[in-house]
Image (cartoon, rainbow, N blue to C red):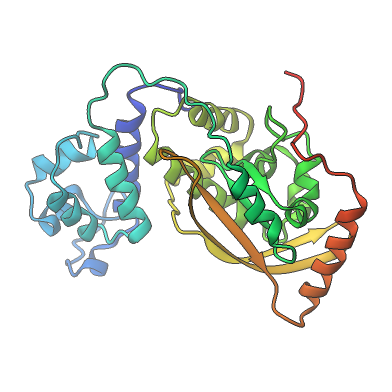
Length: 305
């Protein structure tokens, strides 16, 4: 079933399913506990997690049912250690706890933050490095010309959002062409879902974000399967391999970092780079020349609603 945007029960469900899936990944011998016979379900039992965290089974059971509001950071940290959460998963658990605190009234629909001109100037100054700024919903909110050339299939796709911005999750799961464009499609799709999961943990009441998740869950069985794993990724870096229709395969290293675009909104800046003297660097030069022959609009063209 697709998540219901703005439903207050979403956070409790996320807490419950996240803790259950993390517990299922651990075998007793991994945490120094004896394995006692056949188990009906994989992973640790609730009482074993409670022992490892130093809390009562009743208390942990209540936590796993989603009652996380008011739990101290010390206890959450003990649970994170008991479940062997990595840094990104621990961050996500704490984000869920903060989001579970009682809200004052109904959260309004948030308007997308405007990208300051200085950010666009910064992007445009990177002439041999594709660079873009992505929003919480993983749309490309701003980019430089080389990024637009590199991701031309995404910008040309019918999966762009209502503002004409390329959307990573919508392209991955709603455009069949993404499987050819991304050489490592499945790994990239999993990362896309894990990043989206982390964003949903930080902002569970963002209705536009919930609507995107609901759309993908309704239209893509693969998205539903990956979303149900409750995998989380906050820090984003690695190698991207693309099969570009104009220059062939391009392998680039990339790094992402937080970028404040207003006093209240932080987007993510991602920069790609090629090894000096490599074939990838030559192909970036070709892309820069090819991109210059196109006539990109200074602002994304909005699609009719």
